[in-house]
Structures are given as C-alpha cells and as structure tokens.
Length: 117
Image (tube, rainbow, N blue to C red; front, side, top):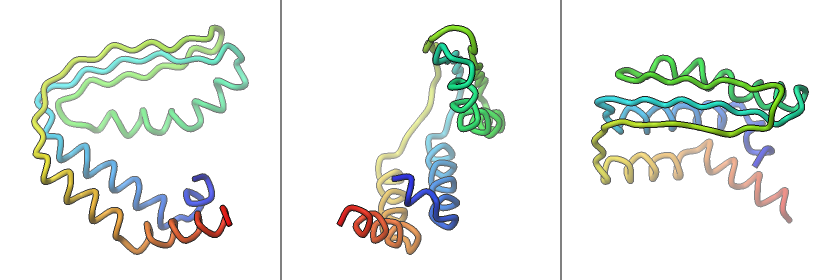
C-alpha cells in the first residue's frame, strides 16, 4: 500500500476522497478527542509526523471540535467522541465508485499488482 501512496497523484486523490466523504457526512455536531502514544518518544514522534497534519486538517471541519494529542512518555490510546450527522448511502456509494474507477486509483492498483507479482 505504501508503494501506491508514493504516487503523488494517488495521494492527492486519496486526500480529496477523504475530504469529500467528510463533507458528504453532513455533520451537525462532532466532538472527537484522542490521546495516543507508543511509550517510546522516538516512535511517538514518527507516528505524530503522520497524525499531526491530519489533526491540522481536522481543525477545518465545520461544526466540529477535534483534538488529537500525542503522549510521548506513556503507551496510550484513548478517545472520546460524540456527534450527530446525516449520511446518504447512495452519495457515499457514488463517491466510492468514482474513486475506485479514477485514473489515479487504477494506476495505483496496477502498481500494487506489479509489486505483488
């Protein structure tokens, strides 16, 4: 999967897909609080290098209070969430089909098949 995510076009496509899914969920209210740590500060730092930017993007979700915090000293995974949202299943299905049949997704699929062969 990392091989596919190394393709810039596919990575941008995944980010757009996640953004579209979040927008399609039509959040009325969302609260999400998470603390995570791996026990080793270096490992937690590597994890935070991936999760930190997601936390920054999550701050732009309307009607949401999202907080993701690293815990560098202890191994911990705790979260608390609540919310109200409305979803339209056909809208999610349409987004998934468009994502799966897009040029970047098909190229990534070919790359994955070639790496496994």
